[in-house]
Length: 265
Image (cartoon, rainbow, N blue to C red; front, top):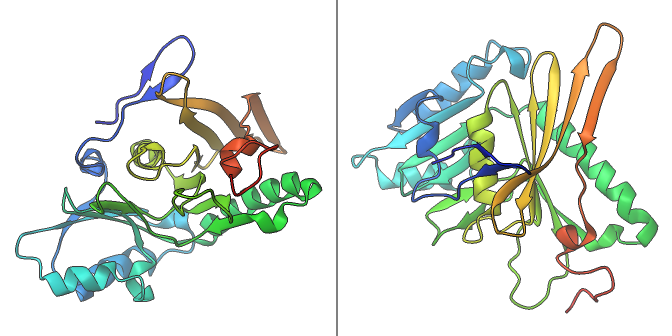
């Protein structure tokens, strides 16, 4: 259950339960998955008459598989080598028999590119450009391969200590409209030690009049807490940035090691 609570220091999220997409059911339009063609037809119906992502009736769609869903259909939809379909799969929850699809847009890539440029400019003076690995369209499985996500963008070290999994240490998730439940679900997956196992998760929510950037991490008591939030508001002639609680990515969070520790340790 994704409940937001507030204490003296931070906003807090609960950890994942057995199903991490169930909480989205009341807020996202849901269909029973019948066939590959039905899946594609529903996706196309969302995008064919829209000029921008803000015009799309539903940025997110949930598909529930039934016991009668053909296993071949499910394997085809989950196959990463089928780009016509895999492009749209954002999250997989086999325990809940749910698939979350997201309409791709130029803005998704643009947001990731902006953050990538910021991170790259920070590590260039340390001559670490080639030490950074990016994760785009990378499906990350967790929890005994019962659920998976693809980050909108992710970063991590190319070289890892023995036993460290190949997955992003920093994940970025992006959404339009009032998709807080979806973004909270993303945070809970990426920061779950059994799933994404990332050190930090950045979320970006875009509305017509403002942009909100949040940073989530584990606090010193192991809770999932909001570490920073930045609001960018559009006025008639300029952008106003409220960064009283700025986002900061530490070297250790990004590279999974201290700055004075070699990559192989």
